[in-house]
Image 1 (cartoon, rainbow, N blue to C red):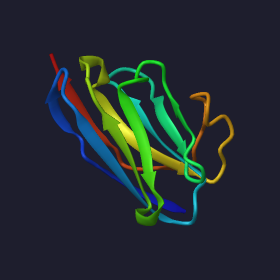
Image 2: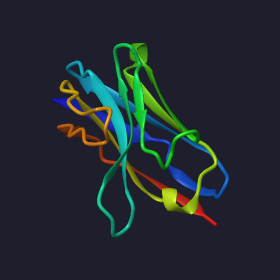
Image 3: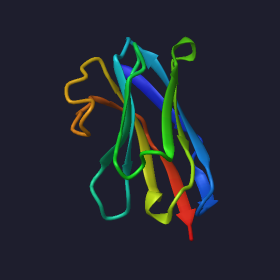
Image 4: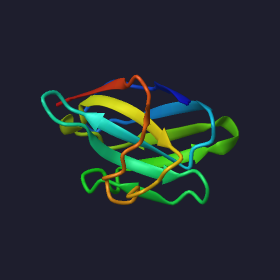
Length: 123
């Protein structure tokens, strides 16, 4: 099992920035990433990163504004979110798995999830 603990959510005005962190413990995981769930909508993939090599994937809606990164020494991944828009509002979940099938497509289905951190962007 992998335990994931997110932090860094909060409230910000449109155009602002937030950085989310996710600390992982437990067995090794080859893929980690961020998902979000807006009110009344299904959970969707935001960004994924391979912990070895650092290759990453982003949803089209966040490309150029969000950056996913990792610090393997700290077992932590980050999501730097810039130029935030109100449609970014939602609960952000960290996810991890040893299996990385479809990690590059937004269809990756990880088995391990954090509790989530709320992000609210006001206009």
